[in-house]
Every structure is written in C-alpha cells, then in structure tokens.
Length: 59
Image 1 (tube, rainbow, N blue to C red):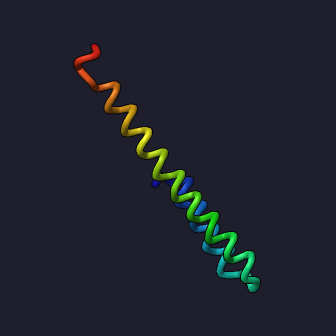
Image 2: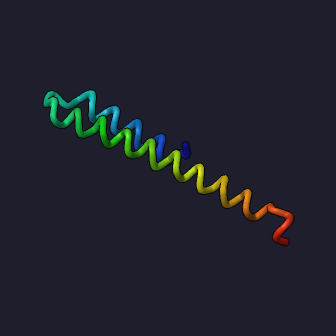
C-alpha cells in the first residue's frame, strides 16, 4: 500500500471514529474496503507490468 492509500485509510478511520450515525460509519467502512481493494489491484498491476517488461523471451 502506498503513502496516499495509507493516508486515505487513516483519514477514513478518523472520520469513522467521530461519526455518531450508524449509516455514515457503515459507508466509511465500505469506503475503506474499496480503497484497500484498489490498492491491492494497483499493486498487482504494477507487478504484472514489471514481469512483462522483464520477460527475456520477448526482447
């Protein structure tokens, strides 16, 4: 997870802890899951790109 994703997760946690309403806390929990999934997919895509670029069979 990169710095921006981690910062966003921290911000979501802060907002979530200050929300008295269940609906807003539930939304922020779902948002955190989306951010985590996007960070995972970004990491996978970067590794796939690195693997394709270093494939010596296609040089």
